[in-house]
Length: 532
Ligand code: NOJ
Image 1 (spheres, helix red, strand yellow):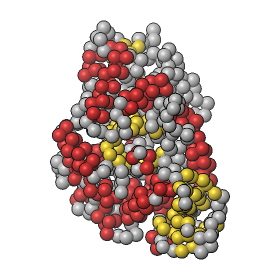
Image 2 (image 1 turned 180 degrees about the horizontal axis):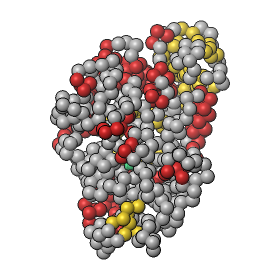
Image 3 (image 1 turned 45 degrees about the horizontal axis):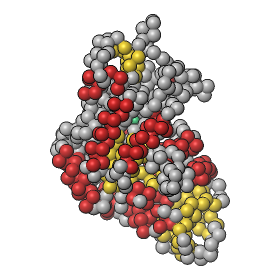
Image 4 (image 1 turned 60 degrees about the vertical axis):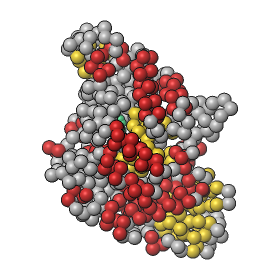
C-alpha cells in the first residue's frame, strides 16, 4: 500500500512557491515544482488546508470545505495539479479540519443568526453562567477562555483555538452527514486521502464539566496547560465517531485517513486511534495512521529515542502500521531544535525506522527557524504569546539565491524569507554533492529500493552510550542503521561478519567496506550498513 511504504512530504501552501507574484504561495506554484519532488524521491504530498478561508489561522479556519482559497488558485488549478501529480506517481493528501470551521462558514453564519435557526445545534452554544461568565472553565490553545459571547443571541460559542474557529457539534447527525458529503466531494475527485486536524478533539464531555487543575503546571507555564483537558477533548464516544469517519474512507478503497492528535498522548492513547480489529480482515476501524508525535518533544538523546521507539514499535497492533513525524508547521524546525549536523542524523532516523515518515518542506535543505520582527508576526498563537510563534517555521521555501529566494517575484513576501537563503537553497545544494539535499535524495532513493527499509522488521541493539542502532530486516535482506547522537567519535560492534556502509550523513564514508562486525562513526554521523 502506497501510504505504508512511501514517504509523505508536507507542503505549507502559502510558503512553497508563488506563481502569481502576490508574495503568497499557490497551487500553480506547487504544480511547477512537482518535478523537484519527483527528483527528491517522495511518494505523496500532504497540503495544509487550501480551502476558502479568512486565514485567521492560515487555512485551519475553513469557510467552505469544497472550494479553493482565492489566493491559492481555482478548482481547475487544483484538478490540473492532481492530474499532474498522479501522472508522476505522486499521491495527494488534503487537510480536513472537522473540529471547527471558520466563523465565516455559511453554516456558522446561519447558526449564529438566531437561537431557532436549523443550524443552531451544528455548533456548540451554551448559556452564560448566572453571573454572565462563560459556561465552564475550558481554555483556548491560543490564550484566554474557550468561549466567546455572542451578544446577538445572548449565548457563548465554544472554540479550542481562535474565536474565528467555532467548534462543530459532532453530536448533531445532520452536521456530520453534511461534513461527510464534503469529504466525499474530494475523494470522488481522486484525492488520495486526508490528514485530519485534531481528530481527538471532536467529541467533548456531554455535560460540559469543568476541566480539573493540572497538578504539574507551574505559574509562568502556558495558561492552557493549567488544566488537564480531560473533559474538553477525547471524551467517551470519540472512537465510535472516528469509526464513522473511517467508513467514509472505506467507500474509496486505497485512500488514507491520518489523524492528528495532541502532542502529549501516551503510546497507549496514541495507538488506540487505530481502532479495533475488524473481523476477518487485517485492518482496524480507526484511522489508518494516528500521527505519532512521540519523538517531537524528546531531548536529543540516543537512549531516550531508543526507549520510545522500542515501546511504540511494540505497541502497534498487528493490523496497524507505524509512522513517525519530526517536524511540521506547528513546531520549531529540526535543524533549530537539534542542530544542523544533528538534523541529518534525525533525517536518517526518520527515513529508516519501521513506518511511514512525514517530511516537512524545507527540512531537506536544512531550513532553520527564522526570527520574525514583532510587527510582522501573523500567527495567532505567536501574536497572543500563547506558545512558539509558528511563523518562524513557516517562512518561504528557499529555491535559489535570487531575490526572495526564488519563491516570489512580488515586492514583498507574506512572511520574510530567512536571511540565510543565499547560502541555504535548493539550487546551491543540488550542485554540491555533500549537501543536505543530496543526502536526502540518496537516502530516499536507497530506502525506496530496499524492502527491509521501507517495509521490514525493526529490532534495536545495545550500543555505546549516545548511539542508537537497529536492524531492519526483510527476508535475506538486512541493514543495520547506526546513529551517533553525540559530538564525539564512537565505535559500534554488531553481530555480523561485515558489510558495506552504503549511506552516511558524511558522504566521504560511503562505499566503505566493513570486514569485521564493527563500524566507526565520526561525530554526528548516521549510517546505513548493508550486511552481506
Ligand atoms: C492543528 C494544526 O496543525 C494547527 O496549525 C492549527 O492551528 C490547529 N490544529 C487548529 O486547527
